[in-house]
Amino acid sequence: MYKVISPVSETDFEQYYHFRWYQLRKAWDLPPGSEKDEYDSLAVHRMIVDDDNQPIAVARLHVTSIEEGQIRYMAVNTQNRNKGLGTLLMMALEEEARAQGIKRLILNSREGSEVFYAKCGYQVTGDAPTLLGSVSHQQMKKDLCEADIIIRDAVWCQELQQTWHDTIPISQVMGIRVHQYTGRVFETRAALNPNLNLHGTMFAGSVYSLATLTGWGLLHLWLKDQKKEGDIVLGDGNIHYHKPVSQQPGAIAKMADIEGDLSPLDEGKKARLKVKVVVRDGDKPVADFNGLFVILPK
Image (cartoon, rainbow, N blue to C red):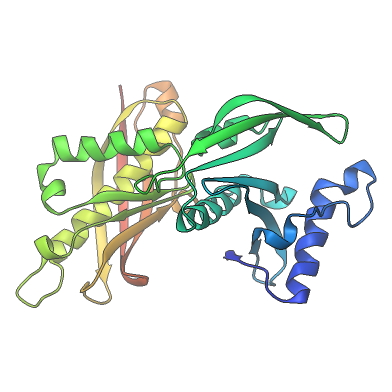
């Protein structure tokens, strides 16, 4: 289990800076302290820690003007890369930037990292200073807006939601929408009022529909990411209801919970995948859905 925290105590900051030095400066034989600069005391810091409260990823946001901020010192340790931790840090810092009224963010991307930042919505604007005399960088920028909360592949997510509304009109009536996508985690929300039963809670059928579309949506985005095509259908699904939904309906599906792979599509065969979806009432899990989806090759 991972969690994003803001370092507060002296011990927190000692771990934070040591991790930053080890990941970003040690390889160049630079001494501890070289990982800091004069803006650290004014910046917003975020750190992801594991179950033992050990840092595994860090990043910083520095507000450079009324409307602009800069993200720096992004680092994820080698053992935990490609798990969506960098995206979680970007989410946390962008949320803070919006709260402070910042309109755009800039960053200097190391060579090879542009693809990751591009998926987060950043565009290359030009060359940036070479770091440590040998590491080339490019400056990238992202304009922020209040509605832009989808951190990864926003265009795909907008297309997905439009597909739901065009082909499954009831999804629009239910108010089902994409809430967040990190590349590893997909989250949806639904309106409560259109789905209320006579007990003042969400219809069981609406909960099932929300879970099904969430699992379907995660597979749809995975196909996009893998540059594959196929028609996704629900082969079988079962759901266990723990408690009724009476506040904010939502659902979450994770790449890590998918069983199966897409390789049969390469041979023109069906791919069968099991997807787990957790339905939540606000932050509380209230139902577990397990769906068997079949992807038919085109």
